[in-house]
Image 1: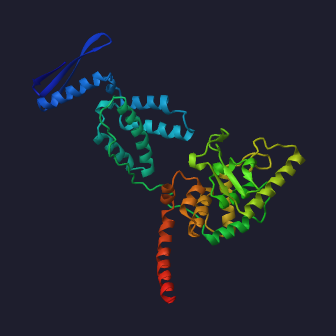
Image 2: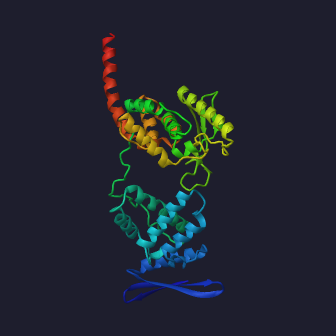
Image 3: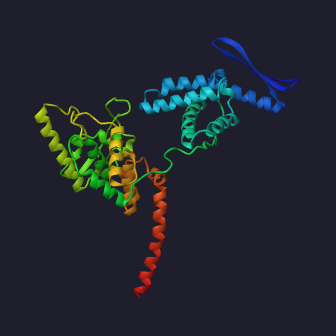
Length: 377
């Protein structure tokens, strides 16, 4: 039962309740009016009736989030995901030091995002916001807090990301790169095979080095991308980036021929040396070991210099593949599926600059179409 009292600094309530067989009281003051105190007391009684721990909000936000991470999130997905959440926890420990869950406000939350955004990119701010919001929504669902301090929060950074401009090769540059890359295809130059495959498929590096020979369908001219190789943490095969990343894509005759040649050379080398391709991987060196992303990028830079074109990374080959398809008028929905994007929105956002260029080209196509119609009269 609640009692409402007038005190020097306004109004306060006192609520009596029973916990573990013992009677206790909860008092809170500082209310401007009697009505405010009555409403707050009624809300507290409602929480007690639902069985909520009314003192849970006294724990620190930082302690709650670290506990949430350790119990509910750590080790459930990838190592990268663990690291992202861990950094968000460290952000909370720095920017909300000593702040109790019950005292966390929208203003306090937004100020922390704003301060961090002064020296970081929008992507970095959004990443912390995503995990803090997920944590606090669970606190809300458990009745530990009763208002969402992340509601309508804006996560914006003022520092431009390093890869803000997507680098890709145009049609002529690709032709030059293909020429120098195919000039000396040998088993010991496995990076060249990876570069050619990346250009032809747009696959991610982890997907390429995780490709096994049983996933190459020579008869139907297709490749099944259904796993990756954890090249960052050396843990072997891993899942694809998301569910949509599991896909089967077509490959052209030239790339198919290159793969056939690579498989033949590997088989001959295995018979000659007695070495074995233990994981049945497609892209391995002469020790039947995987090469690193750094090694492939080094080879790619050298080939770009030789071809006298701008230098890009292996990931830039993925963008090049997508750009070529879009410029050739290939349906963006197909491009999105081929790249293994989670949804078409990701494709539109990633390649908006190309879509803008295509829009300008299409506007001229409308003029041409109408001209042809009038001339046909």
